[in-house]
Length: 245
Image 1 (cartoon, rainbow, N blue to C red):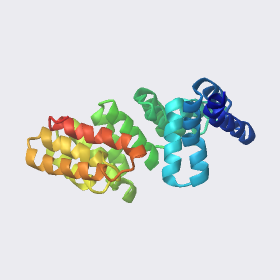
Image 2: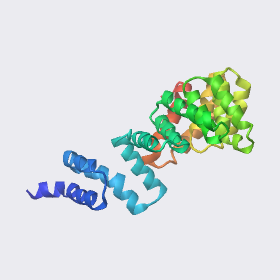
Image 3: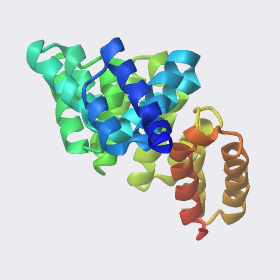
Image 4: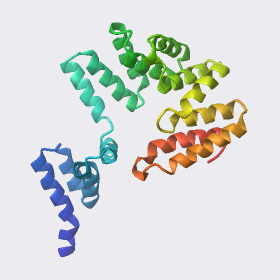
């Protein structure tokens, strides 16, 4: 009896926290069904970010919530757009669709945004990224060229990475190499470096690709374990290009 009480006490305490802080009621179902495991998930997703308040803690909490309900942000964004059909709310829908890999939906939303604001850097970049994911490289390049024409806002490392992808998709290897080289050490995270490694492996520059892959492995080892999942997918992309596991 005492064992059962101690086992479910964390879930009970978390349930009290749910009610007192006005959290979503689905947490109560998770705590009832999953018991101690539900309490652990709630602790990581809600209580740790509250106590710590730091960027890493918030990232852990968001990741846990996304695992439990990956379409929550998308539903909320759609509802907000229906309630208030503004450009800002439509952009939120596009971002949420992209986060779920719904690139057709994201591209359609970005296109609608662009039909009203065709010189907004965020819209041009978001639209270009969706087009890249859909393999529409020529259309993506047109959006990126509009972005570059705006000046400094179109000359960032993130934009260079997008240019590299577009050029690669169009078979313009020399221009792709210049863009990837510029972006590789300047874009935060591992995506730019991984894409450059994959590009070099594809174009026969095995030795350079191996050097880049070693740097990715080094940087991956410095990322906190709870946040390593997304980074690992880029490491794996580079590894596959080199024929590694």
